[in-house]
Each structure stands twice: as structure tokens, then as C-alpha cells.
Image (cartoon, rainbow, N blue to C red; front, side):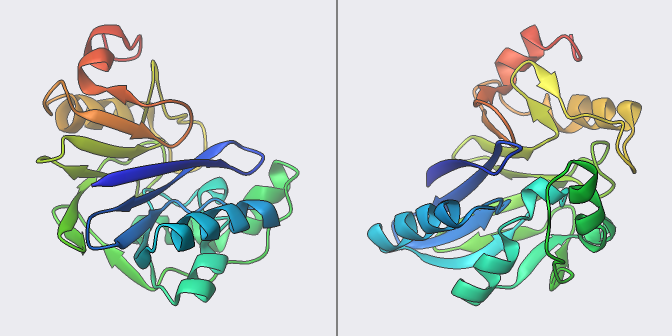
Amino acid sequence: MQIKKFTFNPVQENTLVIYDETGECAIIDAGCYFDYERQELDRFIAENGLKPVRLINTHCHFDHIMGITHCRTKYKLQFEAHAGEAILVEHAVDSGDRFGIPMEPIDAPDSFFKEGDRLTFGNSYLEVIEAPGHSPGGVVFHNPEEKILIAGDVLFYGSIGRTDLPGGSFDQLVGNIQTKLLTLPEETVVYCGHGPETTIGFEKKNNPFLT
């Protein structure tokens, strides 16, 4: 699998396009907010001959769903998330207002996934691991063969997701990271919702919230 990372919107959120040799791809956490960001995403997809077949989210804080309507419309995709995140989509406009960022209303997710589901595209898949604590229905996506973890805002390079937003819980988040993420192979590469990539091994040894 190949992963292309874009850093979008005023909150500097990481949007991922993940694809394989078939050309089918999944768009993860579509956060493109400005016109030029939407064009950048579309250009990459077109120039690489990709066919988006999934629009999936680790969680649905407003900065991670700014591009959902664009991707739904342009690529005729269904928006998939965990059921616990539906309330965040419903209140996206209010959330944006609190940060001084205007948002258009976003329609509710079309379908929901849960722990253990396999989200397939091309010859590839991502396995859903529920890891709430940053948000009520937050998940991470894992592929053990490729040794990759799409962590959203659960785990960052040297940090963890904030837990002071509605539905957040520090104890729940740290518990999920310790029991579900740090048990993965240390060489697993972690793609974060903000900032650079890291590895499970590095975070086990160096993350001040986890050591």
C-alpha cells in the first residue's frame, strides 16, 4: 500500500489517501477546507489514476470533516464513521464557530463501522480498532501485514490526543492506547492526525504520557 499525506485547513490536519496497485483508494479524514486544498487533493487523485472507493474517518471533529461534502459529491462516496461520532458531525458548525472557523453543515454519516470490521479497497484492507477517549467514537485503522496504523488524534509523535473536548476521557484514552496500540509490533509506523509519523516502539520508550 502507498500512503499520501496532505496537511490541510487552519488546524493543520493530516488527510490521507491510501491506495494499492489496483488504483483503488480510500480517503481518510478528509480535511480539505480551502478551494486550493480541494484542488490539490483532486489533482493527486487524477494524476495517479486513482479511483476513490471509500471515505472513512478515524473520528469526526470539525477539522477532520471539512472536506467530506466535497469528496462525497465529486467521487460519489458514502461517508463512513463510528456511530459514536455522529453527534460531532451534527454539531460541526458550532464547533467551527468556537474556533472562529466558519463551517457549512455536513450531512450525517451514511454508514457506520465497529471494532473488528475490515474496510476493503482494491487488494487491501484496514481493520477497525475502537479507541475512544479523544472523542466518543474514535477509532484507529490497522493493517498488520503492512505494519501501519492510521491513528487519527489518538496518538501523536511524543503526545496523545486532547481529552478536554466533549466526550473525552484521559483515563479511557490512555487505557486504550496501552492495551490496544502499544501491544502492536514496535516497528509499526503510526500516521497521526496532526504532525509527523512515529512508530509504536518510539512511543513506548519516549512518550511522556505513556512511559
